[in-house]
Length: 110
Image (cartoon, rainbow, N blue to C red; front, side):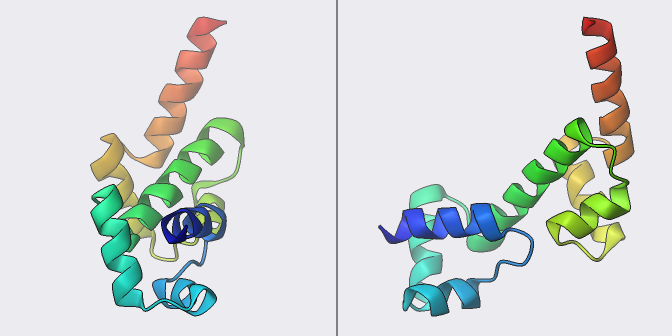
């Protein structure tokens, strides 16, 4: 169904996904898709996309040695100030602090 198509689209195209492109691919209006996503998830398209990008940032921080700048590029953020702001709002620390905490936790488990 359309909701699953939208979620899969966000999941796989998070780097440069857009509501307009999703609309073109599905043949449904951006308004209709927006309403459907919000009604069924409680989040709008932009919030879903941002959440996916931040989840992917966490994956890269935990599993690669990519720089923060490279991670931003991989997930489709150009504005570092904005990225640091939304990352800190969600996780309560900067991306570097998150990585350091994760590494320290992993070291402590070993």
